Length: 255
Length: 343
Image (tube, rainbow over all chains, first blue to last red; front, side, top):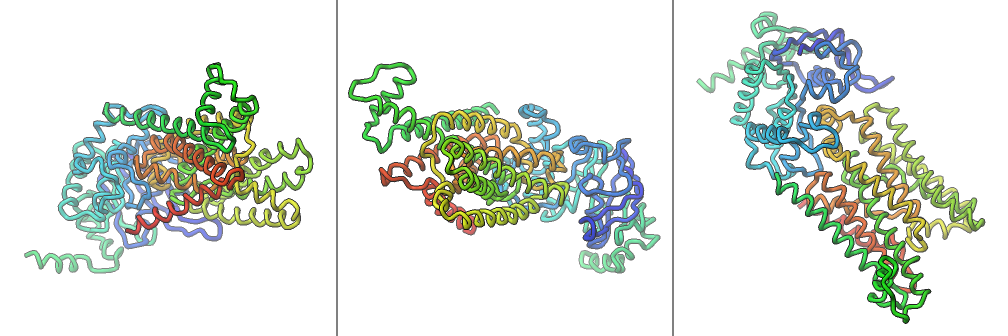
């Protein structure tokens, strides 16, 4: 399923307190692409993800396949797109398994119990994220990293052709980071599914994406492969620093 | 999986059995000079036509059947309705301190009751009829105003918007109540008595209204148990999982307010039950609303029936306001909950 944004603008607030964030975004994401959205703090990365999932009102057009997002019900959107958000606290301590099962929401008919298929998918997602042993623990007792994995498992349980990740490696230790990212990498390659991520870590972005979308002040300043972006110097412009020399300096220590 | 299902049914069955036991206890204990044994004999007589000994006179039968039993049942259904509504509000507003009262049900209902008392209080029949009707209408109007204005302010009805506007609007309605009170000093005592809450004088007629409303309301809300689970993770996550947060929230808030409004208009504004019962249930049985809602109903009802038994017997023949009993138990529990989190 392709995703197309035509001349999209979005922001927060309304009337006199409206703050525009995204301006005139044109972007086409073909099915099966692996996209990284990069940019400095406040450049509109998360806002772009929110707009693609229809969580924010926008001007312009967003198409999921042939459907305009504004004409789609939440259930329909959620069966195409799953979004893993930055972890927020919850006061109510569901168990890990209960939380992951919520990802099956649109697949369970109202008033029905979860099917065997739903339950085995949940177990599979728990296994992938290494949470099988914690399945019956209350989520209130988990660490930030474990909670992040629970939300990743819930996102996978939605079984959508497109996954959006908002800084997925927050709170994760290095080993879990690399395992999770490797899994998602294989997931998108093998199934030909679309993976769209906002990453703070530029190296991670390069590893996870074929196409980089670079945002600055709410506008796309570059879009293309790493080589193209680098030739344009868009990353340096986006972060306002010499990224290559910074990375080389970091790398020196590991030689 | 099978054991999981069994666990759920067993919890519900145990809840029903405990509730039944509490109801029988509450019915058996009372200030009138009737022994527990005789009380149950009267119950058997009324339900199954079993004969009763001659020492029980008709006025005792009438006290038990027409006064005490409906009162006990009223307490049960009010407690159940308030607790379920509290559980729903806490989840929908993602706030462990929220209740229908946060949205102004109690201040609205109090204003309605105060107006009914001052305008119709002197007229015997209309006075007693208008009191619950006006309390219900004003309570619900307050909530609907809060929901309508919050929806206008922000389409997805963010929880913070509702809570904030609910607080502001209930303070405003409270001020109107104080105005009515200060202009009508002669009714002050009756208004205060109503606010403190009581089940005294509740008859079968009241049970016939409240029992179906609270049972059906709880069952309908139970149909939303997954949405309730999801909504407690916040608006954005709910949308990402596929819940149309705006409309689902509005439906749930109105259903919960209907429950509270119906309960409050017959009993006065009784606090703490809606706050503490869902928290206690979550602590023991976990947070899943499939469990929390029915058990909140059963144990919330039982708690209220017990509290009312204390209220009417402990300094008999006088009564304590039921609101005082629930708060006396509720406040320490609440502190305990608060400090437990810190620890």
